[in-house]
Image (cartoon, rainbow, N blue to C red):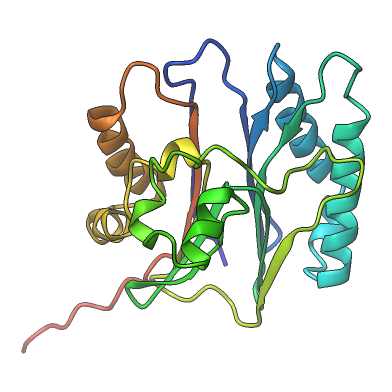
Amino acid sequence: MQFNVASYTNIGGREVNEDSILCRQEEGFVIAAVADGLGGHGGGKIASTRAIQSLEEQESLLKTQDEQTLREVCAQVNRAVLNEQTTQVRMKTTLALAVIGEGRIAFMHVGDSRAYLVRAGRISYQSQDHSVSQLAVLTGAIKPEQIRFHEDRNKVLRSLGNEAGAVPDILLVDEPLREGDAVLLCTDGFWEYVTEREMLRALRHAKNAGDWIARMTRLIKRRAGKKNDNNSAVAVLCPVAARPSRWRK
């Protein structure tokens, strides 16, 4: 099956775009990822770029869509980022990954870059951020809608580039992407300005994956200040098959 895919990355109001993206479709698979680099002096860009490169190097392993293999892939990505670190720059990166096959969808994430699965017109899966603000939601200190622009929203609890290792969250959906389904991966600079309700509304009116992203980025441009963060996304749609016309005699 051919999926409709699109990707986007924008520097925002920063001097360097520390986001990196992966969007590849071949042989019945889509491998998509977004990474948001953390660290000054340009280190964040190095970290996110190396994370994406490491995923590309392990493409054949990713296609197994096996949980243990995905954990091993994550460990290898973590080591790849660690190898780029110096005593002066201890850069790290978040990661959100989706591997979409003909019979299974695999999600993996570390940090506060997000993964969404839209099915039957609603969000059936949304990854939980590894952040202080997400922890506040889980403990009942704040409501889910308050996570955006919370004072601790930039405090990430898990990332790639840690000597102690990186622990990803993994979800395996043991069924294929259906007609009308959609997957969205995005960095925090993207989802902070677009609510889940707005994501669904934009999808209902979108002609394709690129149009879906474009409708959401218009919201970001309208709401974000001049110093807004880098913002990136990858979208995957499972097109609805054309229905045969009915002719009256």
